[in-house]
Length: 263
Length: 263
Image: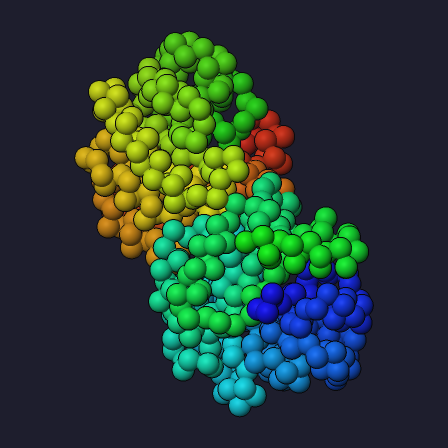
């Protein structure tokens, strides 16, 4: 449990103050926060709330979306938000194809250029940019970076610690080549996130994920791979699921901990 | 148009006799058939119907599903059906994980073994087994073979002509490494199928495909790759879409031809 971090999106509708109280009550000392609820509560207020509760913020989720107008300024703000919250990891979801485009190679090249432009600011703020490869089913509308290889190739254009890769079991489990690549990636692993795969997928395919152990992902194989890589950082459980979200926050947290411990 | 083949599933609810009449009327001389409607109409009757209309059958879709009990006998029957229909290509959808399993590597190994067991019968019948890599979003429940590399590696355990790979734009478009691999695969390409990618995906993610040109896939890049590979065979349009299926068969065919010609 000393590596467990509760990702805020897993209890999407849990009020931030209640979330912090619930984590403290459950003896959890790590949390991953999302930009929107933090902005809603207020950045400085959120930072004080988690700091005063003795929580450490493992990541800020999520920035990126480099296909949108204004991406540069928005990502710089996200870096500042991460620093203000006391986390050194900002998760990047790179965004989909520009409207009407069929040029996915061009969109991918743009992601690499965009990240390169953000590195100086992130580095100065002490924030690692954690590129998250998203499952290929999101290639068109959410993230054109869909494999471990693509994310690592971009990260490796920069020093370790400035740009890394997010290991999320939900996005990578299907890839028969990924485990040895994770093992070999060593300090490029910026954060490790758990969610399980269940079917059928819901419309829009965003909110059909499951708590660890409830699906078909071999989580122990991922645990072994990140361990061999030398990763000793937090293990976040990050699950988006409409049925889960309808439940009270404390129940979600209890089941999340149970799922985490079942692996 | 001399390479165009209409895949029967694109007009799922079009009666087989009407389909054959509609194709003839439209000057289309190639069709890909599905096992279920052929079995419903009768195998010999279906074979006679298409033969008498002067249609050539480009593929029989689909067999595989190697995780199910009875896969061996069912796949042998599918090979016989393909031969009876006069096609030399049987498309294989390899099936998902066995119920409750987290062992995707084991399921993949089983697919390779199953295909090896089927090759003698297929070869004797003059039927090429066309392994279809399905999009990674189907890895759990439909097909554990999700990349070009996986399909090709299995095919290459057998002589060219006995086992090949199905190029389907819908399943492969997201893969940044696939085009040069297709170019290099030469005679391993057993058939080339077109469907386009649109979002949002519907629940179940099976029936959200679009006619060529309506989505974000760069079809011309795929055309160039199969051409460089030396593939001169049929180009099937195979689209599963609930909205399309609700329309009259003749309209679907007309729009399919228009989409095909728009590339």
